[in-house]
Image 1 (cartoon, protein in one colour):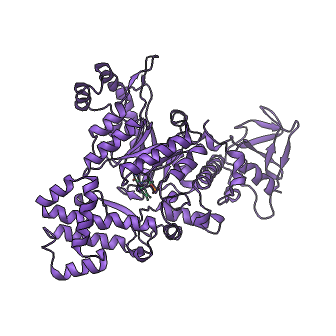
Image 2 (tube, helix red, strand yellow):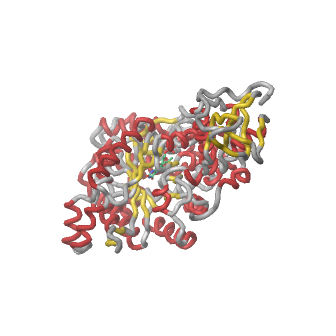
Image 3 (cartoon, helix red, strand yellow):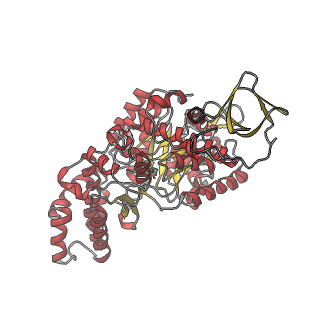
Length: 551
Ligand SMILES: Cc1cc2nc3c(=O)[nH]c(=O)nc-3n(C[C@H](O)[C@H](O)[C@H](O)COP(=O)(O)O)c2cc1C
C-alpha cells in the first residue's frame, strides 16, 4: 500500500479519461518518499494510475488507449522559467518572470539589481529620494557591471518637485537607461512621455521600435488607462513643435502604448491604495483586453502583479489569475543586499502580517497621501500622524500653541524648529530652491517643509540604523513581510542574515511550481496535499531547476 497512515485519495474522474498505462520498461511505485521525490522534480511530468493496491505513481512506461492500469491524474513538467508570460520575459531579456520593484533611497540597491539580473530576474534601482549625482553613480556602476544584462531604474512622479523629475528624465535619456519603472503617477507628465518617445522609429519590418521601455506601476483604472493608451496628442504635438520629435516620429507614437507593461499594485509597502489583489488584478486584465481591442497594438502590453507577493502560494495565485509576472518589494528590503540597515532587517524579520500601519507620505504630505509602514518597534506612524494633524489644524508654525510646540520639538523633532528650518533651507538650496521661494510667501508651505524634514529624516535614520532614533524609523512595509516570515518560520530563512534576493526569489518561484502542480493534480481528484508541505529549500536543492543569466 502507498503509506502506513494515508493513501492517495481516489480521483473523481472516471477512466479512461487519459487512457491506460502499460509498464513496457517502466515501473509502478506506492512508496511515499519516491512519490514525493517525483512530485518535487518539476522538470518531469507525473502520472498516477489506479492499481488494485491503490493509486500508484507510474515511472516511465507508455500511455495508450488500451492497457492494464487506468490513468487517473497527470501533471506536466512546470519549470520556474515557464511561469508567467513569455512575451514579457522575451522583451526584457529575462529568464524568470519575477521582478524586484524599486525601493526609494537606494533601498533597492545596486547590489539587489545586480544579483537579480545575473540570476535571470529583473531588478529596479530605487532612485526616488536620491540626488541626481547618486542616481548617476548607480547608472554608471550597473552599466559597467551588467553590460547587456537587464536592469531598470525608477522614474517616480514628484508633484512637488517637477524640476527633479525632469532632471532625472534627462539623466536617463543621456545615459541611455533602457527601462524604467514609472510610479506614483496620477496623470502622465511631459517627462515620462519624453522618455518613452525619445528615439522612437520604424523597425523596418512594419512595426515600431522604441529604445526606451516603460513598466508603469498603477493601482487605479484611470491611471492604467493612460499608460495603456498612446501618448496624449497634446504632449506629442509639443515634442514635435519643439523639434524633440520629427513629424514621422509623432505619427509612430500613435501606434504604441505609453507603457510596454503595467504592474498592478495591490496592498503593498510604501505608496498603496490597499486594494486586494484578488479583485484588482482581474479588473485590470479586463481593462487591458478592452484597450488592446481598441488600439490593436502589434505588441500587447502585459499585466503583472505587485503587492502581497511573498510566498509560493501568492506567486502561484498571481500566475493562476493571469498575471504575466510578479513584483516583490517588502520581502527584498529584509534581504542582506538591501540599502537598509541590519537593525531594520531584524525588525522586519520579526514582523507579523498585522504589524503595519498607514502614515503620512513625505513626498505628498500636503495632499494627505499615505504610505504603508512597519508599526512594530517604531512610533513613526503615530508621530507622523500628529504632524499631519498639526498641519491640518494650523495656518503656520507660529500659530501652533506653545504646549504643542514644546512637545513637537522635544519628542518628535528633537531639535528647535529654527534648526530644522535651517537644515531644510540648506537641503532645498541644492535640490530645488523654488520651494524656498514658495515657503517665503506661504507660511503653511514652510510648515509642510519643516514637517517633511522629519518624514524624510525618519527613513534615512532607518536606512543608516541610527541607534537613538529607532522609535522614529520610517520603514515602508506591507503585509507581504509578515506572510513571508510565517512561511519561513523555523527554516534557515527565518534569520535575515540568510536572506538574499536570489535565494528568496528562487524559493518563491520553485515553490509556486509545486503549488501549481498540486492544484493540477487536485483538480483531477488526487488529494495529494500531504506531499507538498515543503518550506524554503537551500539554494543547492533549487539549482537543478534554475539556469543563470539571460535566456
Ligand atoms: C521599502 C520600500 C520602498 C519602496 N519604494 C518605492 C519607490 O520608491 N518607487 C516605487 O515605484 N515603488 C516603491 N515601493 C514599492 C515596491 O517597488 C513594490 O512595488 C511593492 O513593495 C510590492 O509590494 P509588497 O511590498 O507587498 O511586496 C517600495 C516598497 C518598499 C517596501
